[in-house]
Image (cartoon, rainbow, N blue to C red; front, side, top):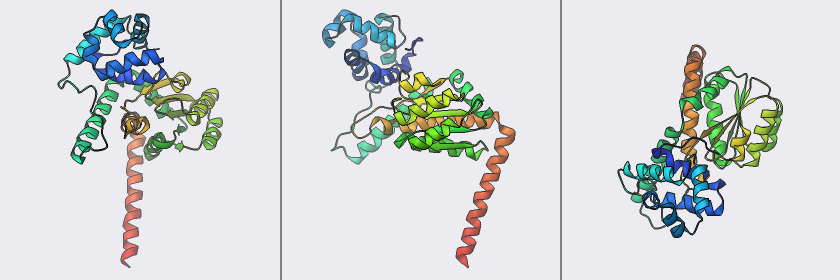
Length: 298
């Protein structure tokens, strides 16, 4: 459970993050917050209980799940979030409909992804990032686990780290992931990427890696997930699910932001080796391309 209240500008993203782990009645309150934060802020706890059909005790528990002592401080944070919003519906980007023109598709997708990046950036702190950067910079090996859309993020992270000379592999097959995690040891790093934080193909390798002594990291939308509990450190991404963008797809761009921040931090920390590695790999690719073009001209 969150113990530190989130800042007003992060509040809606935090609600989305914990939504899957709430009870059905708690989820009703969370969905009201997502739908209209200003409306919730305008109600006392008694009024909100009447409007939502949820007990006051449940409202208090939902507020505490977000790190607040009770409903009054949550209400103040919601009011602050609504007051700093330039556009009344900015906190909840418009959903896409089957008949929306492509002009609306471009606008709404751009808006949703821009807000996912902003929400992720606001939640990602130097205090969270630094231990991950330090561990990877010192690691003998880094294994990254993810399936489907998160598997693409895992592959991106592995190839970025490989580019700066860090031995790294991405696994989307559960059997291979378990095989790799069984061979990890103290000083290695295992990263699990899962939007829900409940993907068995990611959970089991992370658990096995932790048991082997590896430093484990979770990249997930849900800080209260099983994956977050299993990992030594959790980095939270953000993304709003819509009819045409399931959670995994909506979160991909923000997961890539987390990966990029990790990569740049590691490249900075290992500058004396990372920069020559980048140059060497660039030269190798450029030489290959030039030779391939020359052969085609013959």
